[in-house]
Image (tube, rainbow over all chains, first blue to last red):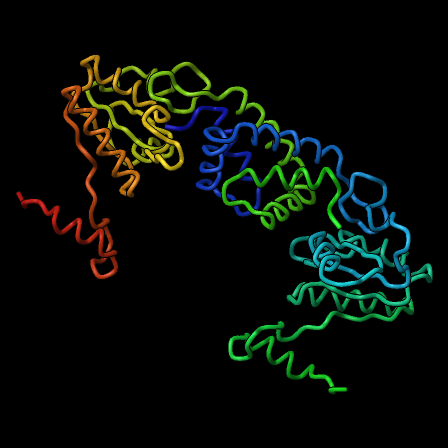
Length: 199
Length: 199
């Protein structure tokens, strides 16, 4: 016993999304068909247009449907500072939270040799070219504080060194509002040994 | 600062799915664009075809692209037993787990006056018509053991009574393999007072 062919195809199609298994896909399919067919049609069109239209910014690799993304094409950004992040969401987070006015380079992932993701997949030859033109004075490394993010950070620091660009990494430690008692040991140890003089 | 227009539209579109908020929608959009554009195109087509093609079985309300679903159009099913369930997934679960060879009626929800879901939205006039034609001898009520499912079950039992059809409800109690110590109080109490003579 199985669902009708079109429904089976819809459920299979929904499973291409990360974190969506058979049960979630069924639940989503039933919801869309029973309660939100307009939403489903809209999603279908949005997916088709996105696949057709969205590519990468030729400068920073951000998702965009233009040649350059809105940050790379904006005037008045500081070209001396370049911040490297893993994902487009990190760009948004930094833009919203900080007053950073420099430029970004989006890796779209991190070094992960086992998954076949090396320097070429992250566009690092393009980054090296950028660093080589002498405009960038500081490379701000904002990869995630994970094993892969750390390895990527080391690789990026070497790249900066080879091109005589200063490299820095965003600080890791106890989050604001966090209580020491409840912070995990790794973070606390990192914060402790990375203590800074009070000025 | 925001994403490019097509990407914003994709993220908004993904949020029509239940359980998908802004962060999940971003994660799904990035995954599809970066790693699975074929999957995204397939999903787009599957959604469009499903919205166009899939309707309800004119007899039991199951999702199908034909006039009758595969169970209603099958020969050799027992027309004297009719099992009422809340969702298409329940039909699959019962078909897979039991030897039931009767027919189904799918409510596509449960009574929920606050959400504007009354007897008409559940197709109960169609069910009453079916019960009225004299073919069905037993109405097996398999709604979920929740507050709304219980209310719906009471309504269905009344409906059966009015049409002189025997109504039964699937048993609720301690699940097989469960340990009494870890079963919630409501289920245990229900199992205790619903005890049956050992024959």
